[in-house]
Length: 223
Image 1: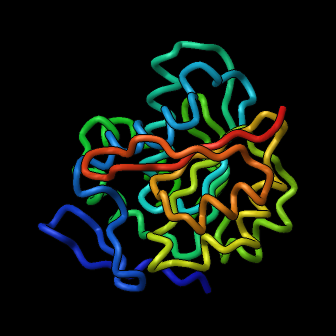
Image 2 (image 1 turned 180 degrees about the vertical axis):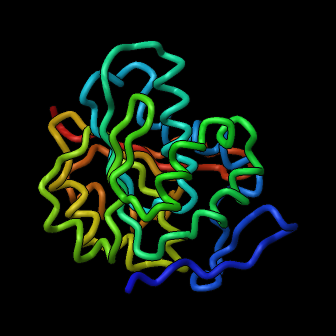
């Protein structure tokens, strides 16, 4: 049986994992952080195309998926994106809905996702996107995954609190499951994470972070 996320709520709007003692999104506007770190960090506005495949470690509230959906819809380009996310402790649909109420722009397009999630569906059909949420420990599920991503959102809880999702072995699997010329972006600038991703084959660079965070990390795989 899948173990769901256990939550506390900060100010009634921000879900905090009791397992990892970490909030699911930035206290300084999580949607803006998603756009800065994951969308801009992977230069998606200039790269998205029919069949482009985004993969993610840490699905959480689905906010990153919805931000991607909004970006793709706004581009008005034809075709369908692919999205695969790896999540060990999925949130209940009602909790996700409560969290997304904090972001009216994302909540406004979240209906199809929430309806399918509430029904227990992990293969989601959304406007312009076909998504799959792979439930389980990524240390077991990612090595057996048959796909390769054009861009990665590395969005696990803080490396200090959730080191398993940032291990050298798992970052090596991220590299192994990246298409030529693919990229990653993450909010963390932890030195161990940067070194592990460089060892996995990425050209890694530190970039300005969002809000109060001085730095983030992004990188590209050889073409």
